[in-house]
Length: 165
Image 1: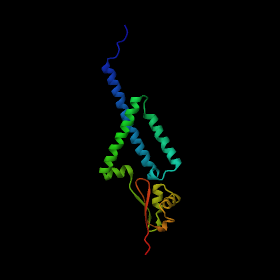
Image 2 (image 1 turned 30 degrees about the horizontal axis):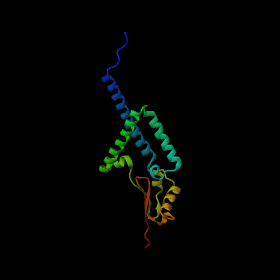
Image 3 (image 1 turned 90 degrees about the vertical axis):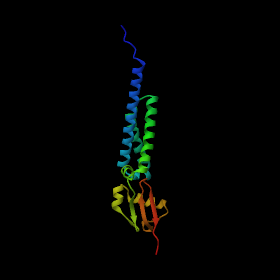
Image 4 (image 1 turned 180 degrees about the horizontal axis):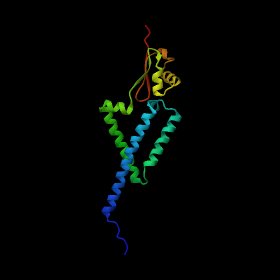
């Protein structure tokens, strides 16, 4: 006697479980991306070289390929979950300075009173040449012209001109 066809309810439950699993994978993917970005440092966010960008994209693709199951419904659930999660994390960071610091880091001074803080550059994985390039973009010929330069949590450098007495 042939096996009975699965009941529609059993099929729906199986589909729901598969989509819930895909949503969980999307959460893991997002957490993995946040971890990769934090390990890479703020520089990757704002002072990205072409090589940095290629590496970041490759890491994200490998992570996604590992966690994304086949099918349009899975792709939709994956994307929707990541987008909703990102929105929720952004709102939570706006409300919680602690969470914002944990996930995004905090601004770090790189130059004070015209003096480059080499220890800060080392902690951020930034070379003096990258700092000088960032300052030139802002219109400074040298660090001696800078009262304060900061690597912001976005990865961009901001600077204030040193006032001559």
